[in-house]
Image (cartoon, rainbow, N blue to C red; front, side, top):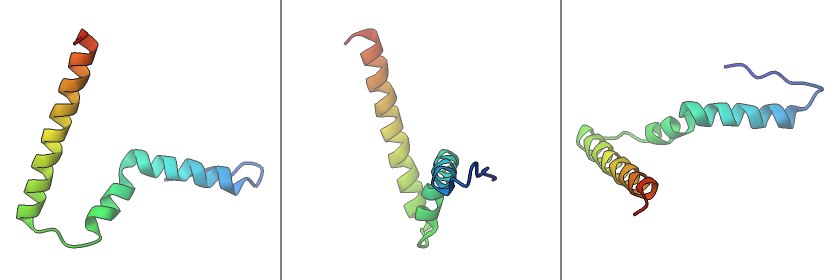
Length: 67
């Protein structure tokens, strides 16, 4: 991953780097890998995330349809 520093503006380059890392999910992966996660815990977390995504998609669908 590369970030171009223009006009010695390191703050702007850092902001761009953080945004790229956020988009690629690096921060989330670091958080998950900070401690060991048992396979059963991983399955439970992934299932909970899937349920959450499904609920969110359903809310958005109903909102689009005008309910």
